[in-house]
Image (cartoon, rainbow, N blue to C red; front, side, top):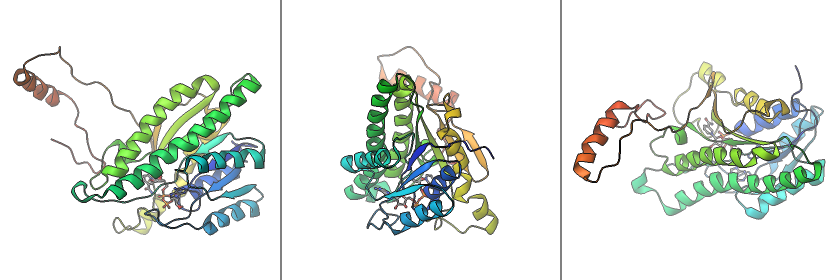
Amino acid sequence: MARLCEDRVAIVTGAARGVGREHALLLAKHGAKIVVNDLGGAVDGTGADKSQAQLVAEEIIAAGGEAVVNGDDVSSWNGAKNMIDQAVDTFGKLDILVNNAGILRDRMLVNMTEEEWDSVIQVHLKGTFAPARHAAAYWRVRSKETDGPVNGRIINTSSTSGIYGNVGQTNYGAAKAGIAAFTIIAARELRRIGVTVNAISPTAYTRMTDSLREYTEEEIEIRDPRWVSPTVVYLASEAAHDITGRVIQAGAGQVAVCEGWRRGAEIEQMADPEALGSRIREMCGQVRKNSGMDGFELD
Ligand SMILES: NC(=O)c1ccc[n+]([C@@H]2O[C@H](COP(=O)([O-])OP(=O)(O)OC[C@H]3O[C@@H](n4cnc5c(N)ncnc54)[C@H](O)[C@@H]3O)[C@@H](O)[C@H]2O)c1
C-alpha cells in the first residue's frame, strides 16, 4: 500500500469516535502526524471529556505513528486558533484540516427551540468556519514565505440531510447545506495559494445514527465508518491537488460525486404575478424535483 500522506500534518476534529476516529487512524496509517481534536461531549453536544480522544492518540502511537490530543471546542474562535497553533508548535507545520466534529438536536420545525437551532448551527457551521479561517491565514503566510503552492487541504463534512433535505433536521440540514456552499466558495478563494477545499457527505453506523432504525449485521458492516475514510485520505494527499470545490458522498457501499444547484427552465421577466405564476407552474413541471434523502419528492 502506498503511503499517501507521508510526513504530512493533519488535524481531525471530532476524532474521538465514529467517522473522525477512522479518518485519524487511516491518515496516520498513511504517514500523517495527527492532532486528535475532540471536546468529548454527548451526541447533543453537552458535556466534555478528553479520554476518548486520548485513546485514539494512544492507538496511533502504539501503531508507530505520531499524535497529540486537542480538547478545544471547534466552534470557539480562540479554541480553533489554539488548535492550529498546537499542530504547528508540535509538528512544525499544518497540511491538512479535516472538519468533522458535529452534534445533533433533531426536532420538527414547529417545536424547535432557539437553543436547539443555535447550538447545531454553532458547532457545524462556525465549527467549520473558525478552524478553516485560522488554517487559511496560516497557509497564506506560508505561501508568501515559500513563494509557491502550500499543498494545504481542507476537508469538510456535509450530509445528505443538507444536500437533499431530511425531515426533523432544519437546523442540521441548514448547517450542512451551508457547509457545502462554504466549501465551494472557500475552494475558489484558496485555490491561488495551493489549498484545496472539498466536503464529504458520509453514511456510517455511529452513535449518531445507530438509533434511527434496526440494522442487520450486514448493514452495520457496510456502514462501518472506516469505509468513509479512504476518500478523505486521498483528498488530503498531495496527489489530489487538482480536486477542489467538490462534495463527495462516501459510505454504505458507495462513493458518489454530487452535483450542486444549477439553473433549470427559465423565461423572460414578467410584471403580472398571475401570468407569471402560470409560467412558473409550467417550468416546475419541466425540471427535476428537489428530492429528499429518503426518496420523498416535494410537489
Ligand atoms: N454517521 C453518519 O451517517 C453521518 C451522516 C452524515 C453526516 N455525518 C457527519 O459526520 C460527522 C461525524 O459524525 P459521527 O457519525 O462520527 O458522530 P459522532 O457523534 O460519533 O462523532 C462526532 C464527534 O464530534 C465531537 N464534537 C462534537 N462537538 C464538538 C465540538 N464543538 N468540538 C470538538 N469536537 C466536537 C464529539 O465529541 C464526537 O466525538 C459529523 O459532522 C456528522 O454530522 C455523519
